[in-house]
Image (cartoon, rainbow, N blue to C red; front, side, top):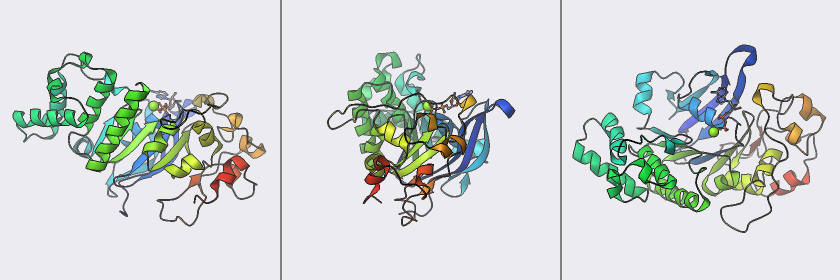
Amino acid sequence: MSTVPLLEVSGLCVDYGLGEGAVHAVVDANLVLRKGEVLGLAGESGSGKSTLAYAVTRLLRPPGVITAGQVRFRGSVDLLAAGEHELRGLRWNSIAVVLQSSMNALNPVLRIGTQIADVLRTHRPGMDRGARVARAGELLEMVGIPADRLRGYPHELSGGMRQRVMIATALALDPELVILDEPTTALDVVTQREILEELMALRDRLSFAVLFISHDLSLLVEIADSIAVMYAGRLVERAPASAAYHAPAHPYSLGLLGSFSPLHGPRKRMEGIPGSPPDLRSAPAGCAFHPRCALAFDRCGTDPPPPLLTLNAAAADGAGRREVACWLHDGTHLVPAELAGRLEGTS
Ligand SMILES: Nc1ncnc2c1ncn2[C@@H]1O[C@H](COP(=O)(O)OP(=O)(O)O)[C@@H](O)[C@H]1O
Ligand SMILES: [Mg+2]
């Protein structure tokens, strides 16, 4: 295992707006992504997932402001301090991003091949036209689209194919890290599954690391090595994927697992989580999840949740570490059966 993480986010805070009216969209986020690892970032819409991705890649636009924290790439590169020139060198080459709804961002008047070749022209100035076309065709085939589609226009492709084109473009320069923000959310389940399988096969072959953002925790546990769950701007749980699935420790993670049908296996009755995520402009006091939490007690309504508490102190290296930001796990409570019974034998 590599000792220096590929991406390390520490204490990241992002607001929209300034002063009294500022919305705290990301609060003290800490994430670690190792080389070649797939990290799933889960949470309902509005929890701050995209904001986190924008901040990490420095694509955040006003009124968004990074107010605190550090983001390190390969240990040495300080992404938040990097200048435009350094960022340009890293984008696409080392870190590629497929933004939410980006499949609708393809230029309608340019051929698919031209759009992929443009990335190569900008970032590989030494490559001649023939080589660019050949590489663009190879990339399309890599994501399951015949190379002759290079001459096609975006409107001639289905949503799934357009999303594949975005993934192919992201992989054009062999990045070490690919950030995918809800890449399959707008697609039907069958197409979604096909694309995920292709993506994971490519990951195995090319061994890039992935930050995969989705509101669907059940989908993430199938493809990710580890999972981070976000609620109202805060990371509430971090765990290896199997632990997040078999033994979620945060009541919110448990609720999220019950909210979506698994991609594989028998359909189960979906419970969902009562209520809806808070409006961050007037987030509830205490733990932001407490009004929706069946297990909440007095303290949850008054004190902000503790920082991520480690549940298995033995996993000090981080890889198998299970962490949760919930007062139930502070060691002074009898953890309710739903969250405790399942913890046994999984650490
Ligand atoms: N441009 C913006 N201006 C003000 N608030 C914003 C802006 N973009 C997002 N937000 C707020 O930030 C929070 C997190 O949004 P987002 O990162 O898009 O969440 P997610 O990707 O998890 O759905 C939301 O409450 C949203 O209302
Ligand atoms: Mg989003």
